[in-house]
Amino acid sequence: MKQISTRFSIAVHTLSLIAIIPNDCTGDFIAGSVNTNPVVIRRIMGMLKKAGLVDVRPGVGGASLLKAPNEITLLDVYRAVNVTEENQLFRIHEDSNINCLVGRNIERVLQEELRDAQSVMETRLAQTTLDQLISKFK
Image (tube, rainbow, N blue to C red; front, side, top):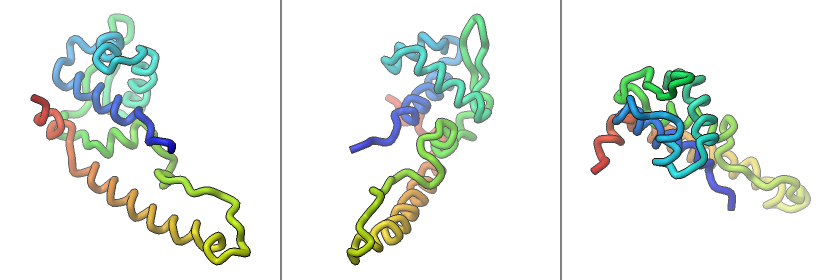
């Protein structure tokens, strides 16, 4: 089974660190907290920068949020790191047998259900801000 990209959770982790300890947030520091390669962090930081969520200081390193944590939703982060292609959270197998009642109809019928499920998920992500998430850290 193919899972949703880990870019989303890494991006949320990264933004949370920047919000809590902005002065120490170099790529190496973030990579150490996430326990991943700094190249992965640089790639995600580039996506977050392109989406207008962070500013990255070249050379000395470090990053800062361009919006307050209470203005950044999980949906903003989800969209910033291109977790899925547009309306493609779920993929459906292709080339079903059109001579079969199920094969002929499964894609159309299932696609409608899955679009609705993705919409509900995105609505839920839009309801949580980075600030709300960080407040749950103990």
